Length: 324
Image 1 (cartoon, rainbow, N blue to C red):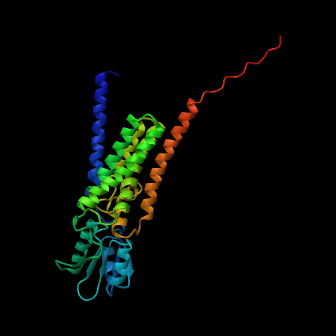
Image 2 (image 1 turned 60 degrees about the vertical axis):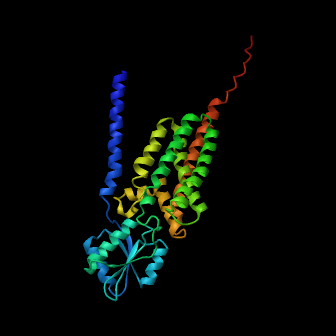
Image 3 (image 1 turned 180 degrees about the vertical axis):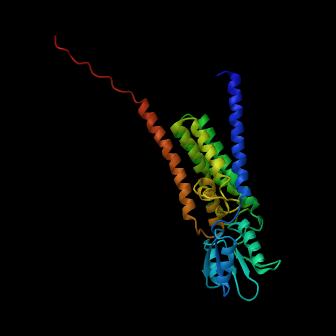
């Protein structure tokens, strides 16, 4: 292949990546809609409200009936539902947890307005977002830098550090320092998230480490193509389907569920859980991050073992005396 043909092929390949990026980032946004969104109904009119919601869209909500508003608030605090509609004493009251998803809180408010026929439904935000980030815009824009920096760390360590053990040291340094510094920015300076600085720093560091370790591990195991495979997975699938700006149940399926099985989505869910819900619902996203981090380290260990095996000289066979 001539240099000109190679350049044309490269241009076409980058064009295809550009189209894939547009689809990955724009398609989920224009297809946001509730899909089995966990909510509760309470009060004397709960049966009628649930039936109305099912008639509007049978697949939009996963509806649970609770006794009263107090029980609904407990379910919200335990991160089990996104909101509740409480009937009785006039127009329905809406209980939401905007900390779980400001987008869902807005949608539930609009639904309650349509059910009540009133222009302004009674809304109580039980678990609200941080006052310095009321619409969750800062939180939504926080995930991409964690992903991009993790990819950059993985690429630089792979290309510039030949020793596999030294790459491991670089990964550990990036995970610890990156978690502490990034949390200093979004927690202490920008006040995007409340909660314990050290707990949030540990999550941010683990998320960054999981992304970078995946890149380094794949590159060590299968070579340079591993860089592209890891980067595209985190950037084109993990980030747009992370639900950092919405909720997994608002994204087209199965992509919303898949996004929670990748580090960006797991990091967003874990940060929300620890910052706002005292760790409720934290086990699954924590396990996902640990699995990716462990997988990256396992690939790195496999590559190191293979390198040692290839570099070990084989003993020359001893000469066999042949009788005269």
